[in-house]
Image 1 (cartoon, helix red, strand yellow):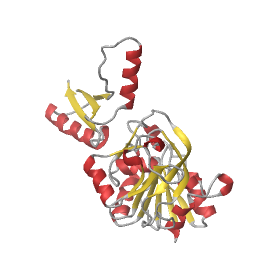
Image 2 (cartoon, rainbow over the protein chains, first blue to last red):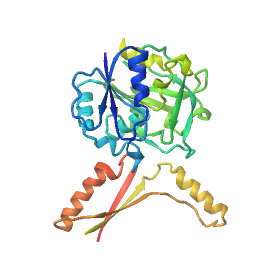
Image 3 (tube, chains in turn red, brown):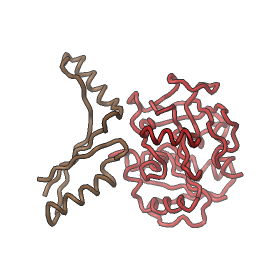
Image 4 (spheres, each protein chain N blue to C red):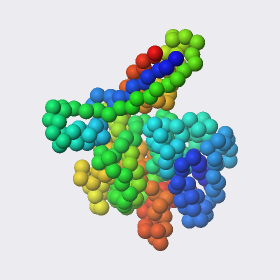
Length: 226
Length: 79
């Protein structure tokens, strides 16, 4: 399987994604500079974390107009797998490939720490290696992860099982206390209607080796590659 | 031509930054502050053929890039 990892000016988790795909999961992987205009030959596109364009104006707002994004949109419309992690999720939301928007954390703080998640939907191409309701420990690192969408959109996401990850306690309980950023309904990751575009604020690529502090992110790569 | 673009959060959208600033003002003794919302102000220099043309193009700019209409409203003034 060949991963394409898009590099925007200001991306800083591109190497982590490359390392996970190439060295931990032994897949092919290539960086794709944001000025490129083709995604030919790739089986999965990752929009990595970082601070594309310095988060100017709004997170992801300018990156969404990078030349490669036209191609990412048409790749996604044709059913290609696209995963946005953190800033990548913000870019997908700005590009309209995922609904809603990631706003400033309720606490106004940049939060970088391990948090717990519950796998809400394990019937996706990105999470099928997990058990339903499995609790995971995965780090977040963001100032703008506060997921917001209007009530109709949230209802649609809830009704169609499109909320993939929710912030939870270590044993998988969903409470307000463990919501790190103020996201509506503790939403941490969602998927599009056709199931091929996935956005997650937590960073699975950072926890794929025990030497780096955990392996709970492996399931995402196991799901994509199997 | 010069345009001023005001971008504000929609009603009902939480503004933690505005709340923090309001709290700060209150703690400084400005007890009359009853609400505060933070937005963005953008000045744009334009070389447009007409005011009408500028209006049309500015609307596009706001919808496409300057505002995220999921959570933000915008208002444009042309001088």
